[in-house]
Length: 105
Image (cartoon, rainbow, N blue to C red):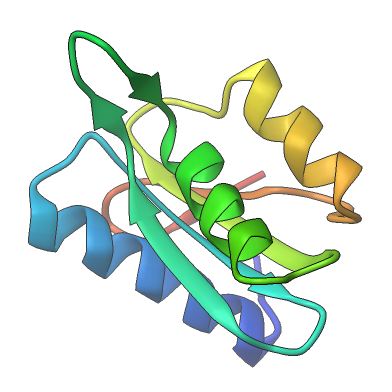
């Protein structure tokens, strides 16, 4: 699959964030102004969030109104909530890649 260079950047950002933190998931989103937000999943006793949920929350709390793109890097796939929140904010297809950065789909 050949990606737009801007989409390749958010996959790389998600991948590097995941690797840097040693997390199960890494995600990155790009808002309507081109700003990017990267995050990993949160797995605490009192709080569990996917990497996509954290990245989206960061974007929204920073003033984003919509997203142009979202990427998830994980051994597994996105959850229904990940796909739903991306779609709600305008993302046509959530980019999903393995830890090596190869986009699936």
